Length: 185
Ligand SMILES: Nc1ncnc2c1ncn2[C@@H]1O[C@H](COP(=O)(O)OP(=O)(O)OP(=O)(O)O)[C@@H](O)[C@H]1O
Ligand SMILES: [Mg+2]
Image 1 (tube, rainbow, N blue to C red):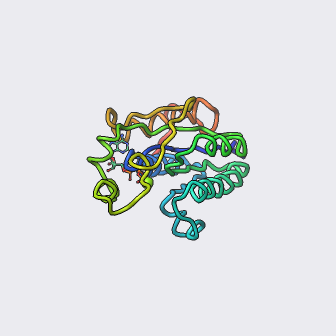
Image 2 (cartoon, helix red, strand yellow):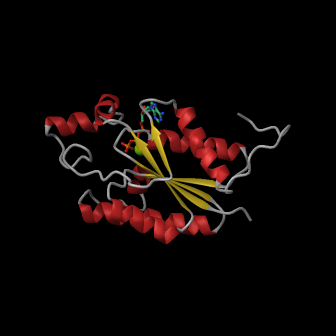
């Protein structure tokens, strides 16, 4: 059995977590890896539909995702979590629980995130229509020692995903493509 691992994307809203997670998922599937994405938005519609955005609920959300990632990881899957996960202590909890854990900081200046505003949340927060948006009026604690930092305002989605792939290869979680081996792009 392959050695499982959790890749944990953390970062501000619109920094690029979901986009990179799905790009990476596709690449890994093409290589024949077992992979599953746990995206904050999807999880909040199902496993965490009872939760809001208080610190307590945000922590519970992350702890539930970590629990599922732990089960996946011990069964040889590459589990990919993409959730803001704003609190350092809760990310560290996930790391300790899971063991094989790669923290990837999806870093992007808030000005760029605000311009992207994929879901229109920054606009709403700045208008006062919603309260408690991470980065505006709720905290985001930057990772201190992440395995990888992706600067998504400087690199393409492909570049970012490839950096994670290299990390997975160098950690022995994913086999590098052998010379002459054909892999769908
Ligand atoms: N290198 C890059 N990596 C990822 N996304 C990028 C990059 N460069 C530009 N983008 C763009 O930035 C946007 C990121 O949106 P995405 O939904 O992935 O963010 P998110 O971090 O998942 O946000 P949220 O926390 O609100 O779910 C997309 O429109 C994407 O095309
Ligand atoms: Mg997202």
